[in-house]
Image (cartoon, rainbow, N blue to C red):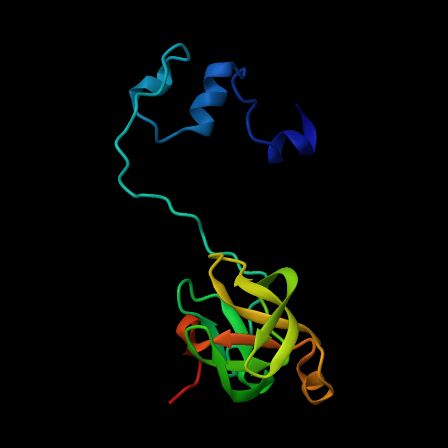
Length: 164
């Protein structure tokens, strides 16, 4: 390689073999890496790997939010809270206009304190805990405002971000 390219180029590398590729990929491995015929010896786990928490949605940290008490997945923004005066199967519950990171089961008819409703259980998408229910249909005209809204029981949520 003469000329300008010869001055700017590094010297030709030695021929590449399978062994040099392995050593480049695993430079910090112990001496067994020198032989392609030996298998890696088992090493005791020093850190237990756990499944990372990946939520479908993260709510803005500048707002007060509600999260799943079991896994801390964001559930609702405080601005979506409609009412705090609801009763769930495990105590007090809140009614929200919209929620995130929540899955919905099949709808079924239930007689609740305010009459007959078609509701679907909702659960945390991350830890699969049942959180409350979604109102799919209200049979009484005075209860129609609940349709499409969500009940989350206080036993399953915690306040996050900016609550003093």
